[in-house]
Amino acid sequence: MGEENKKIIKYSLIVPTYNERLNIPLFVYLVFKHLRDVNFEIIIVDDGSPDGTQEIVQQLQKVYGEERILLRPRAKKLGLGTAYIHGLKHASGNFVVIMDADLSHHLGKQKETGASIVTGTRYVKGGGVHGWNLMRKLTSRGANVLAQTFLWPGVSDLTGSFRLYKKSVLEDIISSCVSRGYVFQMEMIVRASRKGYHIEEVPITFVDRVFGSSKLGGSEIVEYLKGLAYLLVTT
Image (tube, rainbow, N blue to C red; front, top):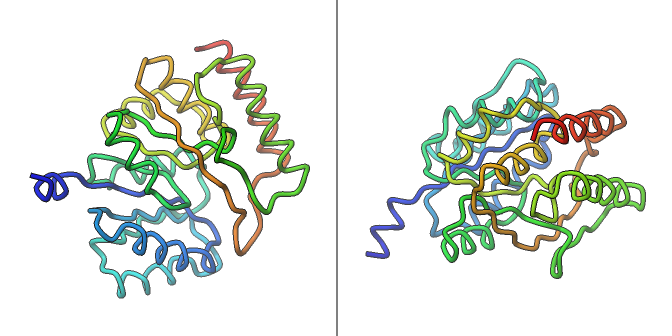
């Protein structure tokens, strides 16, 4: 029965990319290393990276197979939220993961609790961040404190991008979201909470990117504050 269930359950990993040619090979290698006994596919949604990210992904497809690594590019940068919507259209799994790290805790917690969503948190015992300067830590922590104060979502980390969803739940939530940038992650979890979905948290340690620089800037912070105000009024 265990082997039969393993074949039935499939995970679709949606990975938005932009200028990640140096990071994506390591990412793919680590996913295959840690999920050897898991039925999964990686859906890479690249927004027209000028650095050759798509060419690197095509090389990885030759190594791991096009049925395991799906490249579903877009012509230009269109926002994080729409990237997940685009990837979801191509997902064949019954669970969908948005991620940039090892999956083992998320899969185990879902099986243990039957949760509709399992989200990683940096702000409980066992979680944390490495490689961030003080300003980045204050920005992230401040964003979460504001959200906790005004939106009471029932989870400790709203801005993280490492989550596992039941596919049907993700399809339901994403259809009601209007945000398309940095605030998208927060809106997803707030709307899931309002709809009464079972959400579980697992501690994660976020390690800053090996190559390249963060895409979080002043404009994203402004959009976050606008999104916070919008959710306060509409949820």
